[in-house]
Structure formats: C-alpha cells, structure tokens
Image 1 (cartoon, one colour):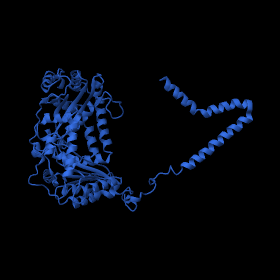
Image 2 (tube, helix red, strand yellow):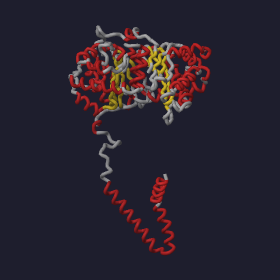
Image 3 (cartoon, helix red, strand yellow):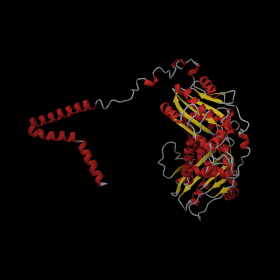
Image 4 (spheres, helix red, strand yellow):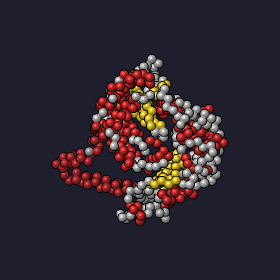
Length: 537
C-alpha cells in the first residue's frame, strides 16, 4: 500500500511540473531575472512547436474511415426511411399515440403490428408449438427445429442467408420453450419484405441437409451436458415443472437427452414442421411499420400456408391431459404452488396480483452490489438474504404458461445451512398476511410497473409482448391497461392470494450437498400450514 502511495505521489509531482517550474522560476528571478526569462521563453516555444508538429503528423491518422453521422450512408441513398409528412401535423390522426392492430388472415395467421416513430422494425414469427406437444417418440424435435433456423432452403444457401442478415440486421435469434417457438430480428424498415420472405422459406421450403442436422444435434447434446452437469437454475426449474406436471405435456424438459436427439432425422423434422407450422398456430408481430403494409406482405409470403392439418393437435387437447400432481422429489430447495394461466387475464386479475406479489417478495443474492431495480428493499432480500451469511440466493419466481402456472420461492445456501434458510423463508412467507403494509404494496406495484415499462422500451421486447398476448388471448392489452390493473391491486387481494397459495398442495424440489442435511418436504409444509391456519384467516 505504501508503494502505491509513493507511486501516486510521484505521479502528482509529475503532473504539477509546470507549477513547480513557476515556483522555481520565481526563486530564480530574484537572483537572475533576465536569464530565467529567456529559459522560460525558450521552453514555451519548444512546447508550441512540438504541439504543432504532433497535430500535423497525426491529422490524417485521426480521420475516421466511417461515414459521418451528418451524412446519409451510401447504402441508404435514395431510400425513404421515414415519411414525416404523415406525422408532423398535430391534427392528423396518425400523430396520436400509435396503437397495436390485429388482423387474422383467411388461413388463420394472426398479424399484430404497432407503428412507431422509428425507422427500424422488430419482426417476430411465433408458433404455438413446443416441448409440451412432444411425445416420447419425438423428444427434442422442437429444440432441434429452433437450431435449424436460418439454414439452407430451396431459394437460399445457409451462407447466403447469414451473409445477408449480417449485412442488414440486428439481434437475429431463435428460441424454443414449452409452449412456443419464435424467430425474431431487427432491421431497417426497407428490409421488412426481405426478412418476411426469409421467414417464409424457413417454413415452406427448408432443405434440412444431413450435415447441418448432424452439427446442430451436437450443439443440442452439448447444451444438455452443460445443463445436467451443474445445478443450474435452468435444471432446477426443469425438474420442478416435471415434478409438478409429471412426464409429458408441461412436464417435458425443454432439452432432450443425447439418445433422443440421435433418433431425429430429416423426415421427422419435415413431418413436425408440416404438422405444427400451420396458419392457426402462427402469429407474426412487427413494430415500426404500417399495419396495412405488414398485412399485405404477410399475405403475400404466408398466405398459401394451410389453416391446419388433419393430425395437428389443439392446445386445449394437450392442456386437458396436463394435471398438477404436487409431489416432491429430493434434489435443491424450491417450493412451488399451482396457479392459473395467462388465458385467465381477460376474466380475472389473479395473474396481475401474482406479479405484484412476486415483486413484494422480491429477493436477492449475497454478492449483489445493489442499485436501482434490484429489489434491495423486498421482503425476501431484507428478511432472508440479509438475515444469514449462509444464504447465497433467495427469490420469488412466477412461471406463467397459457393454461397453468407455478408461483414459488427458490433458496440457495451454503452446505449444512439449508434448514436454517428454509426456516427464514417459511417465517417470511407464512407471516406475510400479518406483516404486509401499504408502503410495501405501493413499492411492489411501482417496481412491477417500472420493470414492464422499461422492458417495453426495447423494440424486440415490444414485438415479443404483442405476439404472446395474441397467442394466449387472441387480443392485446396495452401497457396502460396493464398498469391500471396493477394499480387496482389491494392489500386484501394480496392476502387472499397468499392464503390460497399457502393452503394449496405444493411441489418441492431439493438438492442437498450432505445426505444428513434436513429438508422440508411438501407433506411437512402442509402439516405446518394446518397447524397455523389462524395466520391466514
């Protein structure tokens, strides 16, 4: 440390060289004024000349090779990126806040779009398909279909697609989940048609070359190994949904095991694509373009996709076979309660109350540095994470699906301290109805609204949000409507929901580092609740 101080002191002395020179000059002036004045003048001339030479020699090096921001990029010359004539007039209807619009094409494809004041579009293709629909014979097929996105089609090679998208796009990605597969991308408005044509080819004429399939199967297997070889949050979440819903339906893992991936071939991929990528299952979402233009382009490139196929299953048929089991399996501590799905938003505000409750419980990590939006004042962070040095992480979670959901709490502690951490969680959750205040509720509602509105500032999130609404509800609730519903949540709403959750049949997953470590099972939790019913009245 002393060495650091010495170095810093030397640095300060070096920076103060000119001040020292003036002080010394003052002293010398008293002795020999003429000589020192000549010396200072000579030094100043030397510095000025060197500065001029340095600027001249490096002037060309400092010139940027990129087009100036004040000039039109050569590739955009002649392009009409934004028509200001429609939006400058305050009396024009289009100058008002843009609203999301929804159109259903004759073949069942739903188009949702929202105009913006930007010259950039976010485009998303969303399909009502995922691991929930997989049978034991098709396990892994949807995850592999996701990996085969942007690969060779009848009209384009893989290299052509990648080269074109790298040139014009931003944030191109594909993902798959239990209930949905989506492909999304951001481009300039002028490239909207090209992207939709690429999306269309991925559905209507993919080649599925054997070499590419083999490469992507290897990627899927590596992802499986990474997930299963560590106690990651993803693994614990997958185990929890399997415990809650059993094998099949929502209980299917998003990733399959290596043997299941190796059974998938080109014919299986084409069969699945034909079966599920049909009009009634597809939603195309766009931000930053006129709805009429988007609808016309979607009809042009997707209009010949059939409404359905004879063997296409309905979402309801799968959900009717899904039951909440509420059993427990020992493996790290997560407790989850059955909850209503997103489709109930139109008739009930229970989902909204659940979002507020999740913000109220919040959570945090022992290594968190704090900061805005990290929930440092939430209940689980203050009363669980901060109460014990052994608690590494604790937070509330909310897995929302179309028909069913899971609401719960996750806890991570040092080895040997799990039972102490569980006691802290139980004390906080079971006593919530007795300790909640209006200040807590108001903070939770502000937090939830802030998170929603901040996320929707991103084009890709806004595009995704609209598509998910249409897939689940066949309508769209605006941010203003959602915020109004959040504002309407009362303390009684939260208390009623908490009582309902606590008295339901939970699922518990535990992962212990020591075989002798005490855990809390679902049955033991239910006994504790029965013995303390007075807390929830």
